[in-house]
Length: 333
Image 1 (cartoon, rainbow, N blue to C red):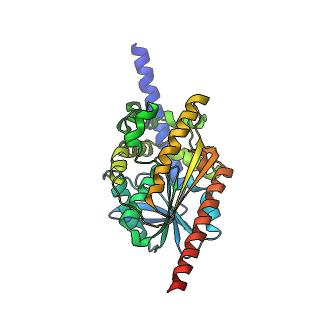
Image 2: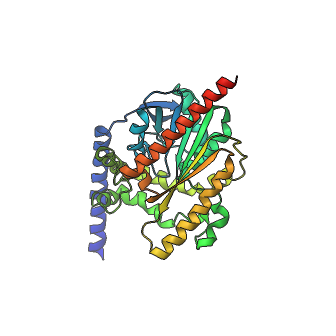
Image 3: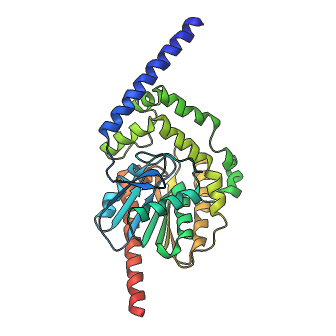
């Protein structure tokens, strides 16, 4: 037992040293593609490309950085101005002590845009929990929002319907065991796991972005941010649940049709339930549309090149709708 304990200590020490130098090498190798902007003492990374009359804002899901849009942003930049960014604690942005909920996240994004001199109008695109943040942004700054696209976004309706498919309460969606991931990362275990291909949610992204994403996923501070953000998911959904209608704001809901890792019967049950939750988003606006990508799953909407390009095409269609709508209003005047 003494020998095993001594060996464990030595391995942990070696792993921690390895993790330290590997993280240092990552910082020297991978530089932010965009700008670093200060917001209330914190450093935020924002990456803008392309040109256009409005700005497309890309808000990723929990655990996702600006890298998640690597397939989609270049397509959008061909005809529009588009910005992705890293929320506090992700990739090249500083961590925050504030709650990582919809209220704080939307306010930080707004201040970031103002400090970076990126004017509206904005077309908000939110994937997963990023959709909830985009929903809050649209409610807080309606005069600057031209449209909203929710990409398989987490609906607040799950607060009441979780039991329909035997899910635990939203408060219990993050298992306590997840809190061990940052500690494993600190001694190099997560880096080894990711290196072996056993855990990599970035698989399928362009090679360069996938490599950078692997480096971030291996860091303890990044994983600590992921765990913290998930812990605020119930607060985020409760914050957006009572928000009022968006009237006739152009709204598009994009939904994944596949659930992976489940048997056929369970996957079908989850898919039907998921579609019902996604349809509740349509109640937000009198000018809404619904699109199901039957071949895609929640992650592949971002990481699969074909699926991501279809998402990009849908966003481009919304840009055209907004442009035509603006032209019609000007002609009416």
